[in-house]
Image (cartoon, rainbow, N blue to C red; front, side, top):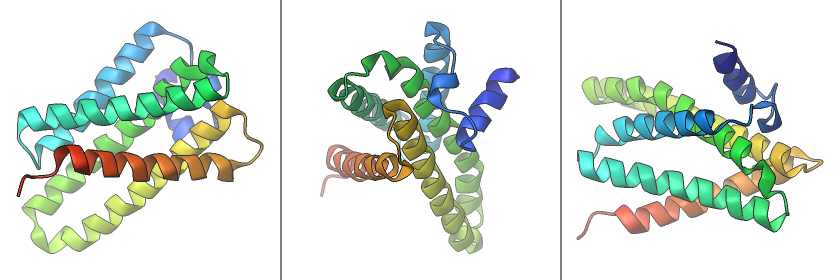
Length: 168
């Protein structure tokens, strides 16, 4: 339970990636959790195989972005804790999104409300990623981390749409 509290504190801006224990097991566990949550969410909208491909692709994009960013800043030693933090935050938001998407699919009259909640969650995840980046990079201001998180989000959405858009 202390680990879950730590991850929740991270998502509430109380702790940073530097507070996460450096552990290969934790990295693998967080990666599996994030991938499984992402696959389950994607599977609600696309086939199982495509859900796996999209989830792996999104995870690789996030890890690659964080690695390149930390490498350029000569802070690559912070990568494991940073990627654990980012994957954990993504996994937590995704787990909360799954029942909301199921509600939206089951009760079309709730779709507008659910869409607003999902948008709020996406903005929260963006804010958390900005905080993680700010902490990992040691930026003096949160806005820089938030800006980088925004750039990553726009680029990754564009890349994912190009890779996985339906063929016309």
